[in-house]
Image (cartoon, rainbow over all chains, first blue to last red; front, top):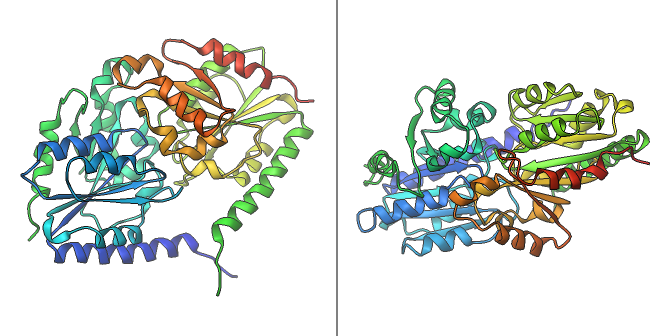
Length: 218
Length: 218
């Protein structure tokens, strides 16, 4: 019997490149975080707020993944930090090879941290390691209460869940604590930060969580 | 030079099965609609409201696609309509072969319309025809203003856009008309319905749009 294991081979090849990315980042004393969420959960706005907050106090570079357009990269560029745009031209996730090329274009000697904003998608990006040390799962409360249960793989892999758009809670019939409970049933080690980028609520908690990732990696 | 065209071949094979599904549906005088959205845009709730509204007046069956769990199928089953659950076990979209098997499990002789609720994902389901006559793109206003521009393929393919969660508009800094304008710049034939499944606003307009799809196909 002939077996065709395309998916497994692709993921294995990806993992090898992701490990090379991780080695390259470590050599440069740089940490990378991989931001994953559904479309419109607020990844870009969270990154904008973060760049504003740490302006002049942290050396952050950004890799922006998008299916089409360079809108997010342009938004980030306004903060005066190094940005590389990856346009996947319809592709549903970033892979390690795309990030390897993006890392070549970033001035890693001048950075301590790289934020990688993945394509908006709760499913496909989860299987593809990029060389990051942490996965930041961003979830908008307006997406409803059942997302951890329905998309468990992301919450299993995530280091931290940013439960965002909390200001919409009174209008959404959603119990944020039920989301946290379900997510932690999948991954008991998952850290949780509750935020609203619109009102600023909880952002200090997010900045406190993030701070250890912003120093030079030894 | 050796060319490997895996993606094109997969999509070509899928299209052939989708055509077979369309023929099978036509023989049974049944129409199918493919509901596509990001996670948490409100597809299931829209289908629930619709089943409630047309109860006893339309013969609708539902195919529920999910990455994990059968929660949505259980929600739909409560309405006493035939439901088939497709659990993709991590897969990011429905394909025509999955739907072919689901159609075998539905009592097509007793139905006029099949709703197919795709996996929550704005990217991957778009390339895979299932045998449907129309694509219903559901977009939550809480996802922000830039979704048509950032995920153009869905809006190019959709028959109608249901702009949902309109009750959140005052809390979201989003102009719904800008979304409509951007979506129609991509697809001038796109029909648009503005709804809030929470308040019921606009649902009559949706039911009016849907009505012609609910009769026996001749």
